[in-house]
Image 1 (cartoon, rainbow, N blue to C red):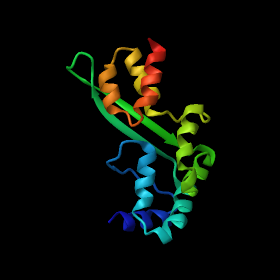
Image 2 (cartoon, one colour):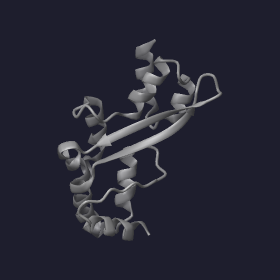
Image 3 (cartoon, one colour):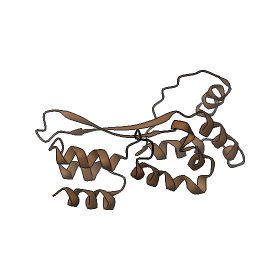
Image 4 (cartoon, rainbow, N blue to C red):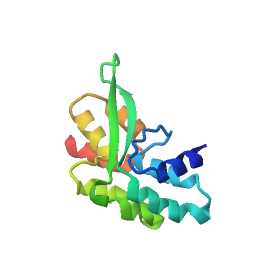
Length: 148
């Protein structure tokens, strides 16, 4: 189902696509999408994706400090001016996308840990819930220690 959908999307010129995938980060959504294809097609599909991808947003609802509401934490990777395309095309470089997010090179993309740190600093969510939500606990732990 996903492969057929991706192939249909790839041949369209001006298409807006919204999809839901169950992953723990924006980067893993890209990896998971490419993982749907057989290994012999993956590099070709990665080039197609890199040339057409606008952005990926990962979202997670976390309980607020009060426990009465939920707050949205998100990670956003935008392919503005094809800045993340090289990381998608070469799967060996996919891990460098995290460095791209840290550098804030495009002033649009944001890492999940950056957002979680801001939410903890504003006392929107607890540090404990932030630690549960992250995919990089060591980095978040260091970032949270920096705000205390």
